[in-house]
Length: 244
Image (cartoon, rainbow, N blue to C red; front, top):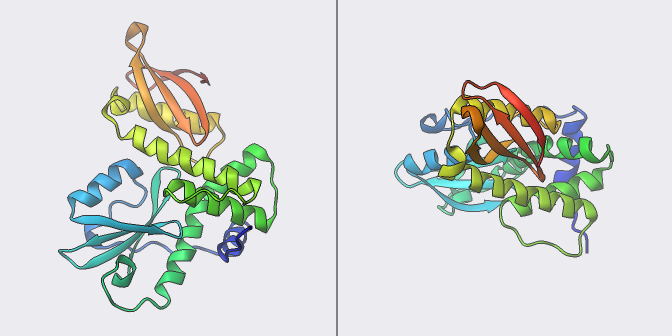
């Protein structure tokens, strides 16, 4: 049976500009992480004493035992979209919950906007609140390892597959063979792949790379479900991009 969530209303309202998301307020020791690529940001969180305790409602919860700080993180298109200090109870360390969970739910909805907008560009603007909500739930279930709901809608399925693809992108992008090659070439191909797939900036990541003739590099780019092959010079000039 299809599940209903309040988040669908929030997502739809944000897409039409009726809600303005609040700016994230991370603790000072991780204030540099919003906007960073998730793979590297997760490593930075761990190196600074944070440990992920759970995922819920599309948000990750990280606990720092040294500073007794709980942080919620929302990832969108491979980057840390929102990083907020939240009540310690959300990390299982006592204290009151109250409105904190509701606030985190709204932040999680913000993180889905870019993915949902990209989906609509590819498949047509459905303009339906149920579709948006189903897609959002599926995306978060796929992204954070939730159980697939076989009785849900087609929009849920599309979102789940997109979330799984994004999770795989992060894992691959953090491996040494994908991080190889000149930074200028890889960055240029990431930006060009965003344009090529008509996706929001920061959506694409390199999942593999190899050298080609003439000292150039070829990257396999992942943009959600979609793959492309990008060739670039060491200085960052894109030579060609084509479907994978």
